[in-house]
Image (tube, rainbow, N blue to C red; front, side):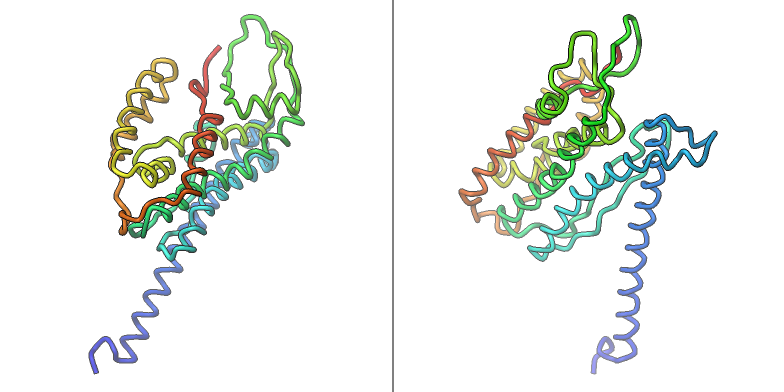
Length: 298
């Protein structure tokens, strides 16, 4: 009998494995709780509360926190479930809290895929599952939030922040509110803001570069030629950075992450026709959710 086959050794090994899994799940849960608190805190301010002066007003942030975490959670759960479908080892979602003054209360959520994907069809499915799942929550949130968002006069000379509208959000706003007169604007409540951010996150993730969701999708379609598209996109983002400085940050992030996508194990297996058609649809989603200038000061 080999040493590893001794009952005592096997029991110790199984105990350590179970303990490591429990510790990792505890870490996921801890991050989720911290992110819930940070988004609850910021959501309270969105609804006119002040948790520092009035601690009970923190519960005003529940609609925002619930909506935003549901969107982010759906996105990452979409990736996770498809990984499980293909027997690809992946972690549960890691939610990332962001303390004030970061107005969103979170830096998002991620999962970690622990191995190369088997083929391009799996790569495509993993990439597209997150954005579609997130949109399934974000779009209803936009509709619901806009139903309770007032339309107010924009004061002459008044300073503040203006959120840019994607084509999809503009369409939803028109369907819910209708035409907004000149010198008026929609003041988003916290649920509508969470939905707006959910659409923006979808566009960010669908950028066709590297390890982003869009990078997974475009590599499954174009293969190694996708790297050329990623570098061309960098030039576009650098130009857009002169209109919104946030694109400079994204350009730097894309350079750090790299443009080269690791190939799947059986890279020679081509993407099927059904997924290529779906790829055209997800390109349309990217166009509809993209905002050249997400935030501006007026």
